[in-house]
Length: 217
Ligand code: SAM
Image 1 (cartoon, protein in one colour):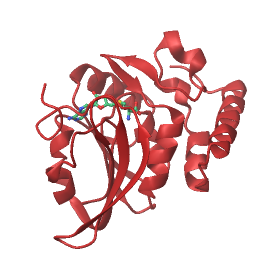
Image 2: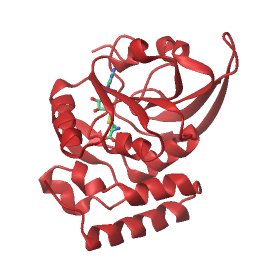
Image 3: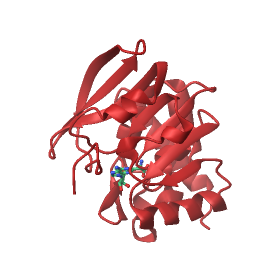
């Protein structure tokens, strides 16, 4: 397994300074991103680029999100130390590890079995206490609901109803919503059993959320 070196820690400090310049201001999120060694979640061929503020391929046609995007979504989610969080789209496991730096209760679901198995092995080697699942996350993970926070890391055509239903009252869903070429970041807060408040933020470009409540294959 790769190690974390003095040089990597210096590169992370520089990346965090760049995120701060770009407008990320939540100190807990910045500290979490300074803590998690992003290079450990990379394919060997791309590892030297791990501390650039860019998305990179992780195999299976998928990507590890840009650090700015990870910071932006995590900041909107406003994770508290006692929160139970569900992430849809485990991918490399990097965003999941940033969430784990903020709360001990992280559930993450990945649709692609090859990525799921690879990331499950990696997280076990790291002794990361995440609860990882393989399946269609557009339907959520009802067995462990309700969640205080739900984060979707793939672009969705709509707000998936199963995810709204699995939010605790007072909880929040952060999800990119749009067409195949661009999506607006949306935060939905469940105000009561029946009412939800929606806010729209910046535009991003994600790989598609597949599945029954996402884009059909
Ligand atoms: N969070 C990931 C990370 O830190 O590396 C990056 C995620 S990548 C941008 C989006 C991921 O969502 C891909 O791994 C993709 O396979 C997964 N995905 C797409 N549709 C899904 C679904 N219905 N359920 C679960 N995962 C899904």
